[in-house]
Image (cartoon, rainbow, N blue to C red):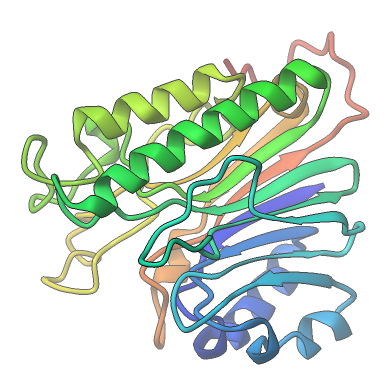
Length: 275
């Protein structure tokens, strides 16, 4: 099974690129973020014609998440238990959708940006991540053998090696602040590990449109596939598709992909080690 995640930055603007990518890369499950479309605006026909079932969650022109799967799409869930709301009045945003795809529980996540240190949205981001960690911990305590994939745009560069943008500075910027990095570490400690980093130790997933960030490779690694032990034990390959940042009207993010083989022999010493 091949799972991909991609912050597409408007599905209506980039549906042609999405369809071309899933066909070219033979993707089984695609999680999308920042789709910026209501459910009734979603251009699903092309993907459905290609054999995908599509579950979407979008309330307005902001945020938005989705999952497209050709290996089954059941138990669709909008938001996770305990997910904080935001705004005045408080309302749940379109930031999390879960579904079971080919036996894997997949969550497409668009973690709040945080906006600025000290901003109410920054506090919301930390609360959101804490709630996600608690939900994950409880889920894996209940079902320790669950193949669980939390994928998407986490809006955090958890280490200095994940940040190559000179404008993003620890102590002054979101995405790299100690509290955000601590929240990411707490999420991993809930029973998850990075399914990509052991196989792709370098490379960014996001480059700002401004100031020639992409040609200078001044990007950030903020898009992740985090998996439970049952999921990471099945990982046989991974990739960051940097070339998707090229061409006409690209997203500012690129897809991240993992390959899974649940039938592989657990004693095969040639399989990658994922901690």
